[in-house]
Structures are given as C-alpha cells and as structure tokens.
Length: 503
Image (cartoon, rainbow, N blue to C red; front, side):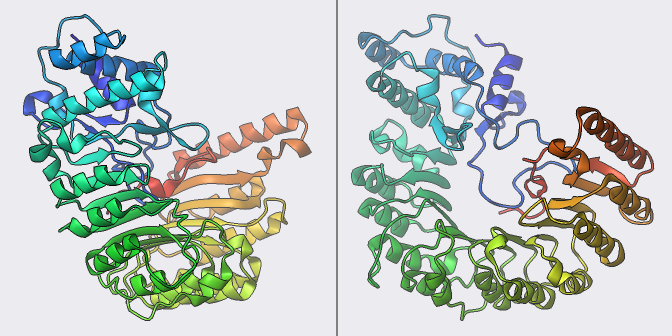
C-alpha cells in the first residue's frame, strides 16, 4: 500500500489537491487553467507550490497510476492481463483513494506549449491500442467510484463513458466538462442525455459537430463557455448549429472566452445578448483581421462586466469599455505594438472615463500618451496592479525614467504591484525611484528590466558587478520596507497569483 505522505506528494505534483482524509474531504485534480486574472489562492507575493505551467512529473505520476491499477476490479485486471499488459501485483490498498477524486484531467502542458496525454507518457512502453485499453479500464474505475465528480476531461476520448457502470448517477452531477471535435457525435450526444447541470464548458473547436450543439442545448445551468482554437470556417451569414446553441444560452452566460474569426454576424448576434456577462475574453488567432474587427458592434450595455481580456485591436476594447457601466475591475490588453498612437490614446481616455473601479490593468505604453496615462492614474483611484509593456527593450532608457517619475507623482494610494515589460532603465534610476517611495505601500516588483540584463553590452565582470549591485539594492529596500517582493523570472505573471477576481 502507498504510504499516505507519498501519495499526497504524488497527487500534489500531478496537479491534485489533497486534504486530511480523516475529514472525508475531496482529493481533486485542479481544473484547466484559464486566461483569468486570478485562479490561485495564494496571498499577494506568494508563489503557489505548483505553478500552473509546471510540467507533470511522469515518475511520480507512474506511482499514482500504480495505486489506481491496484484498485481495479478483477474483471478489468483479467481483461488487461489477457491483452499482454503487466499490472502491479502488490496488495490492494485498504483505503479507497479513487473515490475521493472530484476532478479528472488526462492532459498536461509540455515544454512545447502543447498538451500531452498523461497515459501516453506513463504507459509509453505499450502501443497505442494497449494505452487505450488501460485508459478505458481506468476511466471505468473512476466513473464507478467517483460519486462526487465535478470536472471531467473527455478530450480525444471516444469510448462510451456514458455507458459505464455508475455513469447515470455520477456523471449527472458534473458541473464542468472539457471536450473537442475529436469526440464523436455519439459520445457527445450520450453526455447530453446524462449531463444537464454543466455550468462550465471547455471546448476545443476546429470543426462542426452536431453532438456538441446538442450537448450545449441540453444544459440548464450553463454559465461559462471557453472555446479554444476556433478555426471553424464560416464564410456565410448562416449560423451553424453550434453557434445557434451558444446564442440560445447567451443571456445566462457570465464568462465567455472565444476567438474572433471570419464573419461578424454570429459575434454581433451573440454580443448583443450577453446581458449578464461578467468576464469576457476575446482573441483573434490572426490578430490583424481588421475588416472583421471594424464590423463588430457592441450596441448593448454590459453593466456587470468586471473582467475584460482582449487580444484583438484596441478599437474593439474601446467599444466594449464604452458599453460598460463603471463595473470593470480588470482590463488585460495584449498585442498593442500594432496599434496607432490615436488608438492607444482613445483607449487610455476610455479607461479614464468609464473605469473608476479598475483594480488591475495591463496596457501597451507609448511616450506620446504620457499625459493621458497620468489622467488614467488620477481617475482610476482604486488601481492596485499595473502591467505596462512596450514594443522594444532597445528604446531610450529615459522613457523608462519618465514612466517611473509619473508613477511616483500620480500613482493612486493602493497601487503597489508593478510589472514593467520592455520598460528599460538603469539601476541608478531604480534606486532613485525606490528612495522616493518611502511613504507609500510596500512594492511588489515583478519582472523589471535593468541594465545588468544586457550581457551583450557588458563584460562578464561588469555584468556580475551590476547584478550584485542590483541584488544589494533590492535587499536594502526590502529591509527598509519599501519592497515587499522582487521577482526576476521573465515568465512570472503576477496577475495569475491574486485570487480576488474569481470566476
């Protein structure tokens, strides 16, 4: 039998959350990471023990699956052994670990920024046919044992889970489901018959599937739809069944995440009905699909919209912001290096006018809109976190100094979390900034570029000297209470580590 502490370690590394089993609390696999601003329950400045992007530790996952395989019923074990699959022969655990799982996910991120199937990694000594046999029997175990199942990932799975023992009772309680077009129509229609209470649906959509449309239509409590890789080509104004199903649910949706592709008819119809929307994420996989962007209309108002994340032209963001009712708390804007000075200025002015409750902002910065940016800081008096990025690190470092001066003079009282990407300045400039921040809230400084990073322009000795100098500088201001945290990893994204905007 697995030792309890080792089992917990395996689960934690494999994105599981565990709690004291004596209390009969759940053991869960964390749900897939959204682009939301706040999924972690960490305190400000704390990094969770397992980063969302962390790769699965396959060896520890093997230990976990060893325990799962020991809990397979004899019928499943016999079925697998007859097909040449070696199973562990230790004594079956006396504790029923599997029954405590509430979230089941079989994909994990890899270094190549794509998702891998954990079954292919753990059981790589077997061919694809035997891997599928193992996956099917393990899922049978989960479906029969997990009486409190909340989240299930069926991406690329085409065996009939809805027909497994216990499916009618246990799958009917699902509140979250992840699926894609590789699920055949029969599988999705089977889930549509059993699952009526799904609240959050993750879809990898690349082609039309009538089973998916049926699944969406059957839901009675659907509140969140996240569509990934929306490459469905639709060159006509006629809506396909999936689009029609989504539009029917629009008035109850509070969280929508999708890509804008060809044709604006579907999007305009959908956006006009999002009366309860609280979180809206819009991207364009091609980004410069300007013709479609110009055709997008936001004639409705969004009085409940709190989180806006945009990866398309800033003109669209401006339209949406103007349609809100002072409700936005977080705005996350990407890819602004393609925008004109006028577009950036109009956006900054719209934020100043319509977002008095704004707390977190990611925005592209140009020196030409510095005065407008000052006005934004004045009007958005509740601002706590600011992520500013520029198009190139090799610009004049005086621009970085001007930005820090503006933050010193105009930052609202609660603003203390800064991430300045491609805003380059010297160590002396940072020193001057910190020396004048003494009467304000302690700072959380996330990836900030100072001149010791530029190895190509410095000798090795100069680089090491500057790095030591920067470390000493940060240590000094930490001791004085000016800096609470200084994060150097360029991959760190502070907005992912605050839980006060949760959907």
